[in-house]
Length: 95
Length: 485
Image (cartoon, rainbow over all chains, first blue to last red; front, side, top):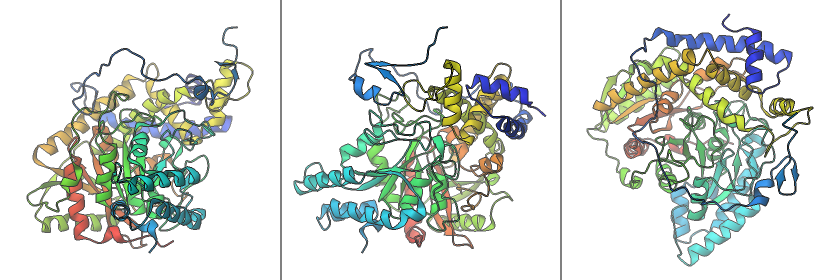
């Protein structure tokens, strides 16, 4: 086993996911099998290979630092789960 | 004749000659949807009223001969991971449920400007994560050739809608084969352009270093027309390429004489369905008869592509999907504090495959594992890209099967995620290397299910890919075979 249920619980906290006990068990088995398959990559010596950065020859793209989009408060707030006037309303962040 | 069965170029010609109107064409498409979508389930959202209004406007533009484009008045379906202003966009996820985008994806805006009619939004695997359209949070789409089978994925709804004549053409996205594999499963033409050829702005992000917009169409000419309409630089997508867009129709001259076509030996493996092997070899023979030079090549790192892809794609996905926190849009659960709100909202909003990939990607990026998984995968990705660079030194294009089998049965691969991932074995290297590739029909198997041929080109050389595909299509009748619904 490469992966334990404790690993799954730790990663679930990092990923902000609530998992049921059954999901934790299933994911432990499934991710363990998938990670075992990924170990295939260790067959290759990559000590002198640069990690991939971009598919084509494009480089960094710059643009002028000016506002081009039209703010539309109503359209942007239309999908808000909760709002207070022109503000997004969210659960208390600072205890 | 039923107008819904027309190809894009046929419909465009008829509209141009005023033999038909866009309203007639659009109505025919909606009638076809009404007659068949209870079986196929290709659409998540239909936009009938808006579509008919767009058709009326298109007819007015045609009447006045005002900015006529090949897409003017043509009913097009859009995968539900493109933002469409004012039209519900779910990404087939409960976490977006009733999301109404405040703006259009650049490609959708281009279609609107060209005067296309937007029929509706098609089903997909949730967040485009899957190869069968079974991972939709709403319902699975079925293959129009046989409703017991999957349409492929993730653009399964778009492929099925084209195959069932529920639209004239469709847009999809392809991160690891999500246009080409469903095109193969449904017997239509699917094109994934070079990474950077088409803007990704307004596409719901999955794996940003591989996501690309492309088309699902009834033939190769339609594919060239749709690419022409959506290709080009977009200031809103800094990864979109600034280089000039060629005239893709010029490539459709039927001439493949002296073109050098490579056939990678690693792609013809024992796990392949025998009819796929037969039909793809038949297609290679056909192109040889037309003067192409066929040579066996080697892409030695092919066997590592699936492992690399499922590390890189899940790592990028885990980061991209962090935005679904239930604060500014999307589903928010009622929980006791902020931390619980995040965790419960995401638990309730995401399906099993999305959670699995977020978990895998988070693990691969987490402290202590980053070097062993993510960095290792990016190094092997360089080797995979170099394989293609070497091959393209002496080849103009590469020919392979699109998928190892025809469309499998619904439910068949759901219990084993790794088996599902392996159905992308021929398509994902192309995304890892950022190359253009197209799938087109090249035969039927013993069960009467379509088989796809994949043509891979050099970076930004969609023209050669289209040229070979068109020449093959001219020489055969496979693209004229239709699903019997």
